[in-house]
Length: 229
Image (cartoon, rainbow, N blue to C red):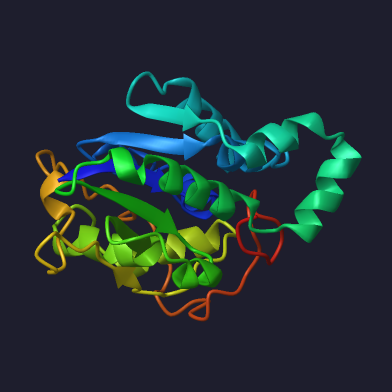
């Protein structure tokens, strides 16, 4: 059973720029945003098209979307804007590290039959060992599964919309599933609500799936031409 979904900064920006954060809301469990990931979201330029969408999503959190305090977020808030820029250059993966810190703190409190899901985009995250209770899922792999479940019309079309919005997104189908107590890989799809299917994604757009196939292009809150930071 899926107990928590923990999105990194990149996926939140990606689904924000196309106004599809509702796809994250369909998980039948709490969504946990670390304080460092939230800080990375809020530091984006006011002119970024995803900024108001992400702000509204965070503001409507209630019990479904929660923020967890980490040492990275605490340290970040103590720094001046100039110091924050310096630290961000020196520790570009602070958001990912805050997620690992959170998982290490709560892993022992989660039942052996429960799992967590980390949604990510940075290649470096693939090398992080989060433990057997964690599903690791790339944003595009998530889109592919949503297409297979009949919730969106096309993963490639959704990625094209992300690229058209100026956001990089690799066509990466990486998924590492959590492992149950019997040693077998387990699924997360049973804890995803497919009750009201909505293929509104992208039927009004005509971007070709092949455009920007290598994932190149400018960023939104993540910065021009860069990945989520």
